[in-house]
Image (tube, rainbow, N blue to C red):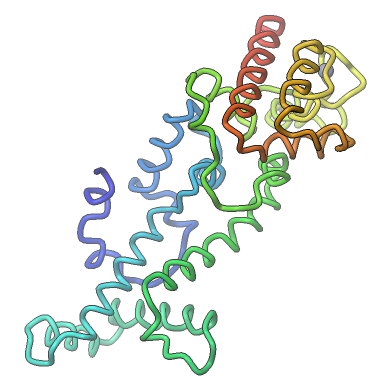
Amino acid sequence: MILPILLYGIEVWAPSGKFCFEKWEKTSIEQNHTSLLKQVLGLNRSTKNNMVRAEFGRLPLLYNGHLAVWSYLKYAKKKNEQTLVKKAFQLEMQQNCSAFGSADKAYLNLIKEKIKPSEDPNMVSKKRVKIIFKENYTSNWIINLRNSPVASAYATHKNNYEFEGLTHVKIKKHRNALAKLRLSDHDLQIQTGRHSRPKTPRHERKCLTCTEYIEDEAHFLLECKDDEKHKLDFIDTIECTYPEITKISGKYLKYKFLMKMNNPEALRSLAFLVNFCFKNRNSKTR
Ligand SMILES: [Zn+2]
């Protein structure tokens, strides 16, 4: 409902063809988009946009914009020579520095990179163009994720650009707690140490309860002595659905496995546990 309003007439005002997602991030359109997604999961405004969108499997709206421009170009190219639309389009394409001309060139170059040399880039279907445009974004997205210290935990378990099953968790506070853990939007020492000045070295961001371990997401959920009984009960519960979890050794591999689960019941148990642990920790530290 909101999308057509935000992108109204984008074929006219944004046909540059440049895939500059970095600049787009700062536009009010994209900020509206990500802010809405953050509200749905109760996330902080500062949570990284590229992680939030990935949770929903949503691309920046610039993707929709490029697709709209590409569709318009295809439509205009096919129009009868005698129509006003075609004549106006041809006049625009003849201009020096034509925005539609640049867009057309950029799209054709991108499409050519992904198809066989024998194929005509002008004849590629919209379905394939959607995939090509999506890959163009996600190939950089994964690199950015791996290079971002804030996303270090997220990058270990998020390697596909698909919608995550958080909506299976019906209780809002449980769902939000799980989202906050997944997207590192919390105040575990691994994050607060990053923001302190001077910055606390990673190896010094220790858990306040079990002082020998770094307090990161995996420690908090699986290793910390706090709420130990609840954590053991939780593992027992999900063993029924995922018996292979007993064979996984090491907290990081286990954490990755838990974050990749998609069984609704298991996700609800996980979200319950995460919310319980955060609540308990907050009552001690605040
Ligand atoms: Zn601990």
